[in-house]
Length: 77
Image (cartoon, rainbow, N blue to C red; front, top):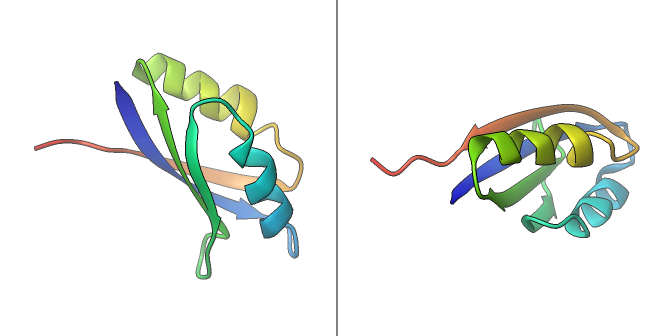
């Protein structure tokens, strides 16, 4: 199992609607509005890095109002 934090930038004024839309995606654990250089932080789980990539590219980035994402896989050292 792979988990990651996905940092999301949105169009101005769209953070709440983007976070809400992302919450409905299978594999997403949490999706919260935040302040700072990113507008939404998402925590997601997948069975593999490939599946995580598909989740981000095909589903999360497809949400209307997203301008950029940064995926940060969790590592256990």
